[in-house]
Image (cartoon, rainbow, N blue to C red; front, side):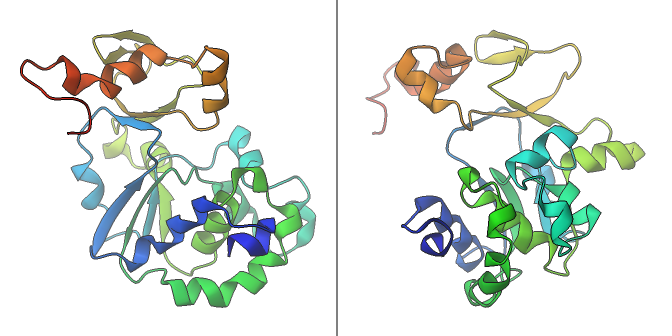
Length: 220
């Protein structure tokens, strides 16, 4: 599938095997992420939604999924285009999107390849598969806005932007007191330049076990 879109094998497309795993309900989280709160509440939402992302329907994030030309393609609705979710966090249910189903739909998706932001590898395809699945989908950021009782849901923060004050692995952010996770998508090229954003937070958890009394080396 990766070859179809990029002309070569692209490892991120292995994410499409999520629905073939052993769990009926599951949450996938990209590895370049630090989780700061319990995510159990997400499973309580899966009976109502087949796909649940953390962040979607933001004007400034559509460009990481679809190019401007998608509006002239006439293949997707405004709502489907607007969803444009970050797929670094996906909660779903087994068999909602099987590999055989994906393979059957790839030819149709390829017709929109020129409108996809393929720099973000699998993210455009996965958004296409979710929004054209016929299943219910949403994100925590949408639920926070439209459901009064969910206004205090924790959110994600991107390490490429200010996230607040970091101290001993915790974030203090007056505007958003509950941060569910922080992700470093697109930021790793800066590590070689010696300026990874919020590196203090990343290293705190990367070496957390090394700090514990009597602990072994990281990875043991």
